Image (cartoon, rainbow, N blue to C red; front, side, top):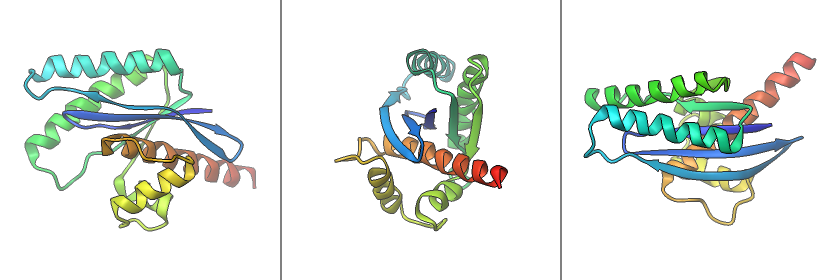
Length: 164
């Protein structure tokens, strides 16, 4: 099972593709889609969708997961981020990749066991669970991997729950 995790950002969108084999997680690919803020919004949204399409073609993920919008960012940033998330969601739907969404609180809880864990605690768990020597930079990449690992954990719990 391949999972594509996405951490949307208005100028840097992190992505991470992980593989689940039994209870083992491993990293397949990770990186960042850079979207220059100097460009108009519509071309940036198109570029993000096009680059996501290329990732989907390259990796053929079984499922994708996306972090939801923070509620405490300013309104303009939230609107731009919502537009970006929308363009990514449309591309995932067009590519028939099932989408799951997680709040930052749920991601932290799934990885660390505490919804108010620090970003460093979450990154440390990503590094440990994926058996990485170092975490990829920028942090948007490790955040995307955290979303993917969160989904892997939620999937495992759901499967156990349904099987009992």
